[in-house]
Image (cartoon, rainbow, N blue to C red):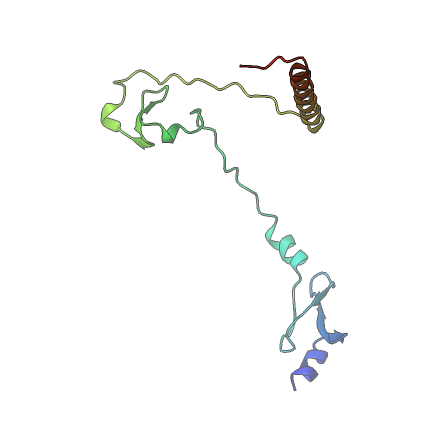
Length: 142
């Protein structure tokens, strides 16, 4: 009984999968129930609702990274924080915390790593050869 009403409402089957055309755009919508009367596709819904605007999650506070892990941190406005919890009673009583920014180290490329590895191997071989020469010449390292 449901298949008869499904086909009357514009539904059809392709390889055993139920399809129905979107009533707004006319695009086929797959895997629909055989009991439905009409369907609206995802593109039509997005056109009606609009694309959601993503809110920026990272709002810079002007505080250094990891400030909330410090035992005590005082920002430039004089707000005092103990392990990330604000202490309003202490506001303005302490001087701002001096932040030391670590110098970023440059990452080595894969080629630089391979060259350094080869240099280490070469140095180890030179050391082994010198050790053998010393042994032959009766020079024992004490």
